[in-house]
Length: 298
Image (cartoon, rainbow, N blue to C red; front, side, top):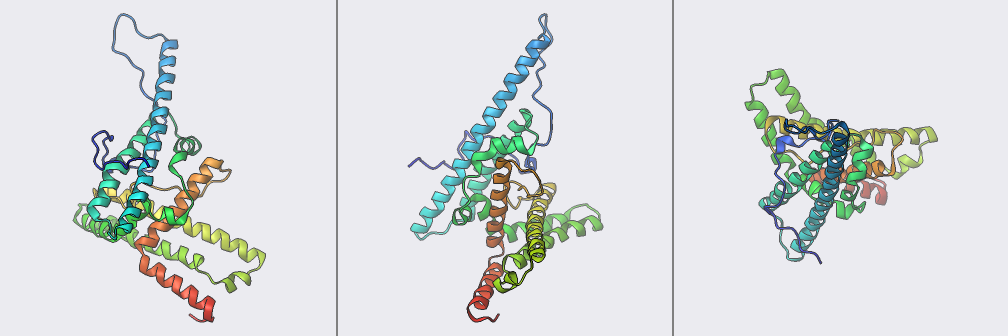
């Protein structure tokens, strides 16, 4: 078995929370300018150097994706070992994994993808494909992204406090604070679909079923977008983001296999995130569904 990464290792790339965003968006590539001199590069040489640098940054991004995937897998193993030892992970331990390992690797991936010109979802999904390593719900539940849900309420309180102390207008403050409860509302909207009874589903006509599927997808995408917005607000106000990266919705037609895989992973891991963040609400929904299935009552 490979050794787990040492938290806080000095060879990790630097990263700042405020620099983390949903991913590379710029189309600019690495500059190929050279200092002025007697022998400037020819146009052909500039082109060759540009291609070399693009390939280099792409290779670096792929390498970092592999390292980040291994970090997440090591984290899952670490949590399994803690359970076997009868110990609970401390907040300090989690933050070390999330903020000293995951976040810097993710920032490095985004930086290199921007520099190699990977500015479409198709290009990014191909480079990032090894990061999305499982569809197993029990394993997804144990990942760094999902386990960040344990700190949702603390991070929401910190964001709320930072907004109130800011010099923003009262109107902007209210709008940004309302985004916190908007995420909870979006999650409940999705739970309404997820825990709809089997009898209700069986009684649906074809058109009703199609509407249900569209509604469920829309609700799921709404929850993802609301969580991404909270991450953006946390960076705006200088607090810890709710998750170490933003997630993709499925609002895209003609998906390539790689894009579809990335969207599926993000959809499922966000669901595990809020199952932890709002565990009492999810548990109440599950118990209600079990009672209805078993006894026909709520």
